Length: 112
Image 1 (tube, one colour):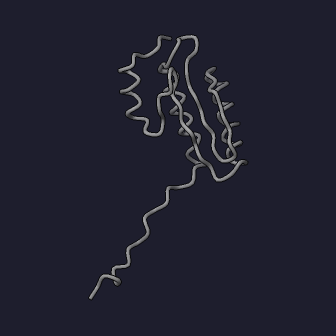
Image 2 (cartoon, rainbow, N blue to C red):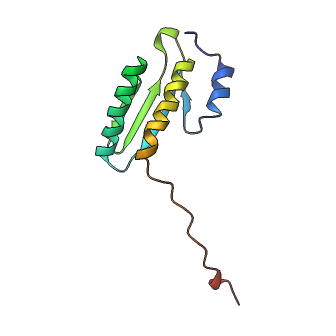
Image 3 (spheres, helix red, strand yellow):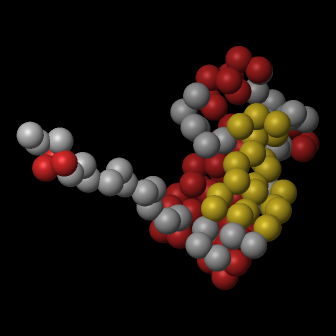
């Protein structure tokens, strides 16, 4: 598999808002409610990595898990990295706390 050009990487990253380029890899940090959920996610990532034969670098910090993806034998970022990023996002979704919603406005406070 051939490494993507810088332009190809930039174009693909535009669709991956929480992923960032870091040298010759792409990286994202996921946040969970606690260490147990972080480790559950890591185990799911490990199973997916074995199925894909594509193994990310994984850093665990209590409720945060950082994944770094690069195709070492291609010397950079490939389609395989973006495909695994999609899978990682899918696996994280059920474990990720929902984003806080905006507090409802109290319209009576502004009424005369």
